[in-house]
Length: 161
Length: 334
Image (cartoon, rainbow over all chains, first blue to last red; front, side):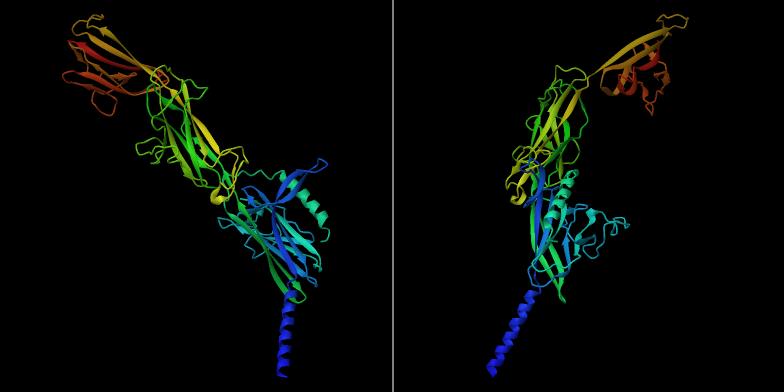
């Protein structure tokens, strides 16, 4: 009897570990790319994104955050938050994400708001409207749940100072 | 969220529109070469009643080095005279790139398009403005190519003085001679965008920037010659209403000092010894019609009695434009 009881206890422990793994089914990757102009087969000039390893001041980088629901349950109330690297300046109007409400932070991610609603305190202590260059974080709030087996993405563009 | 492709096309259109203004900003400096720019996104969501927070991978890009330099002449046109030596032209050299660079300095005085060639001072024509005086001085250290090539961090600048000797002959007033200071990054020069693989700070790639990794500016000397002309005339009035040089007759001396040329004769002092057998008439010194006192005081004129009595007037700086300066005084024939 004693040995059977022990066996049951161990089984329960394994089951709870498996449940824990299921609770993080969304995987996410961030990619930094650069825009590159090219001419397609029909002679039309287009822009494509190419991987980038080095940048110089003035270069623009497109960050793409892709996430996929690889679990079996729906992921809901999704918020993606990405800090804008301090050496980079957010490009106005470049934040993008299908099916999302995008808000910005100019205080290190403490508070978020729509452009025009967020403020910063300038050097003289006066409160002014935050400009895109003041943004520190971007938040994409997904308006619908992400079903198992689907993926979504968020994007923004920033320029190296 | 499944219509990924269509959204992507729209994004590309946005990107294409953005390119139209993407290069409006010019960076004199920027993020330092070798800096790693890291980005990690965070996602929060709920599965059933559980809240989950996950981070993405960290995307890292490294800042490459841009090589740029700016050379700016600080001197105005330098007035010189034939035969003058060690005449300085002052330049600033600024590292406008984003990495630390060492620069080679080359001076050239044999330029086309000017009237004469200054001669670079020997053995060292380039000096660092070591004492920060803004001009050449004894404390300044000579630049020795390959030995003490200046290393500048981003935004750092130095001031240098290029010295020339002016030929002693064959020059006329207002002729100009030019000298150019050329500065090159030792890492390399080339058209903007030229890559020097692994040659940047910390082994990152370096790239020639808008200045192509070199810079130069040109300064100018102008010959300022000046000729000083003095003419003296005398008028006599004798006690009898005539103009005879008899004892008791008064002589008014008129000395006209003028210059020709483009320079300025500075600190001009006119001294005239009272002739033998005459006596200075006190209180008769005039400069351009204004009476001066005989005492060596605040005004510029004085009469020095003694074994060789003389009248002296400190006229000061004279230019051709200022016109002739006229000194008058009177003596009586003994």
